[in-house]
Image (cartoon, rainbow, N blue to C red):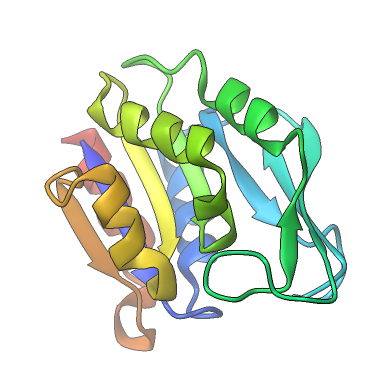
Length: 170
């Protein structure tokens, strides 16, 4: 089962996915999540962190836009190595969870290829993809890669964790 959760920034995608992880008992899946290191969105450094706690800079703010989509971020030179390693070890008993994939990550071809390989592999995949990056990621993954594409909006947000858990238990 491969599920993509999408929605606008701030729609509750990550909150719903973390609640589903708790319901499923997935404490250390393969993959990673992204965050601003406790700072506000748009901070100088964006981090990637494994679900087991390994953390590495994903990108740093620069003066001129360099990231896909014209974002003012430059990928950390070692992000690809970190992210590809975070995807290793996935198997049917160890799912892959990616929270979240956006425009910046598209600038790392090795990471995009590893994510696409995970979607073709035997492990279940739960991926959060920003709506503004969805079409580009689906081009990388293959339009049929996701068994389900769920859109988060205020009306559906509260029911989403249970819905996700049910999909992966089936």
